[in-house]
Image 1 (spheres, each protein chain N blue to C red):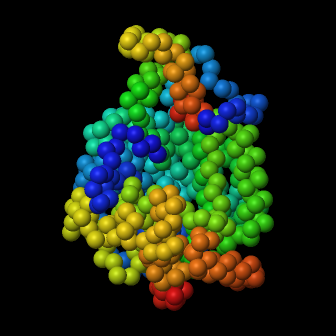
Image 2 (tube, rainbow over the protein chains, first blue to last red):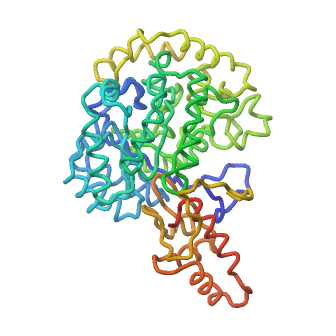
Image 3 (cartoon, rainbow over the protein chains, first blue to last red):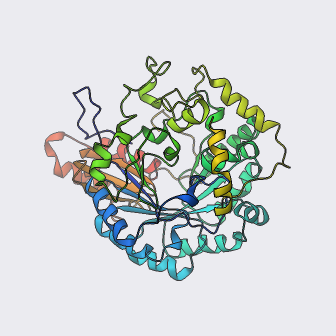
Length: 387
Length: 100
């Protein structure tokens, strides 16, 4: 992101820049049951999904605040019959609109009607390049339909991102996945390393790849990146557990990213709702402006006054913002701690222990699928897992 | 991107002399809140400097590098010959996949 053109802050209070990204999680309903879903494990117990009018107001208010990129996500956003209404409004407001979908609920006619509504781009996710594995991970027969829908997306004239979520069981198929992306004429490929929050955290022992797997995948990704330069952009990020420095999570808390859940809760990231001691505001009770600028939740980790050692005196604190608050909480019980992925963290050994634990976990350990039944059953278990 | 010579695979074409267009799914719009032009593309935003916006707005599917440089020279006669600057910016824009 270029910083040119933005006024710089002269006061001690961090300058609150406008949110650039609005991620609208329109529903938690999803026909798929992926065990690495970024939705919260306790989603089944959350409040009522917001209606069309309320979402239209959220779109208008956030746009007025400066939001530019709109992600229409879920669950599966195609479940919503009012999706075209929301897209039409987003187009009118000047958003760049991105539909983030599994492809289930799409057909060629719907792809065309979304095009007419002004949708800018579609991201289709795949669970694997191999049909049986894809369907096993998704918990339903989905692969053949996904392939058809990726073709329909391109036929309707959309730029298309193909997203492959990577983990231990499918990482060896990276070459196949990239070949599939070439065949389907993807404009971008996101090799999305599983991030260990929510359902993925619950299944971490079964999903976390080994270092050897990651290094091999890196070689393949680099090879394809060089080969396809100028034709297809390929994004690949090494899982942060294998890094020595934490990721600059969300580009900083409350910096560019605003997520609204199906029940209207406003969050600075996908996983923040688990953090204790927070009252996350709801768009039905507060304006987006109040939420973004003055709510305690969005201001809590802005700037760096909240940081503890070793972050507080670290020269890299402006670069990675101390890493991920949710990851810090999950490992240490303290959301203000240094993300223990950092090898300057005195608690780095907790990450290494997670890697060792995953290494000795065999394929026999059952995967917990994301569905309402497991949501109810595992809500308490997850609370235990995060200390 | 700017670290000297970049090795491209054989099927990669560096900036060409033909008509230039914004890459598929890319568009430029002025943003009141940011007070600048931005380039938008799938899941991405780049805030453009005034000169970057000025050059990219000439990319219309018709004009070539030479046309665009000539246009900029016409617009800013007091700034000397801008051809080299325009070309090097368009090379970067092309390498980043913003224009085709």
